[in-house]
Amino acid sequence: MRYLVLIVVLAAAVVAAWMLLPEERRESLFEQVPQEAAEELSEGRDSRPSTGIYRWEDERGRTHYGQRPPPGVEAEMVEQRGVPAPPEQDFSDTE
Image (cartoon, rainbow, N blue to C red; front, top):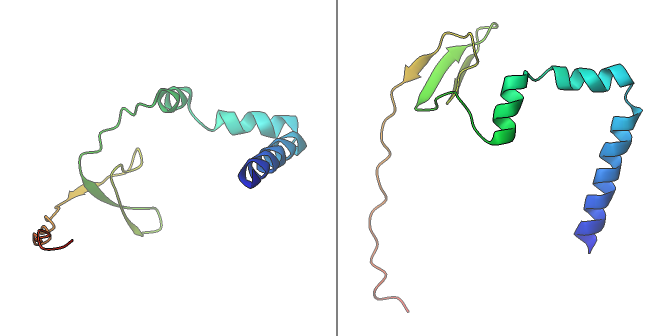
């Protein structure tokens, strides 16, 4: 029951914060997400491949790693080394 009350209070706080924003600010929040990207997210699909780890630098020269580099950034794929499997354990003697 406590969690239900907490969820209701949090939802009311979000709605109240939303209503306190000026009308033009509320609309600009939705304009920040391109329509095509919003449709992909709502349908649970993503058109970008994620088949590896990439390395790239941002405009400040900091190095970043991730599965999907930001669009328009020159990124290089990082060689991935395998992680050794843990040794097999025999649990037949335990009760």
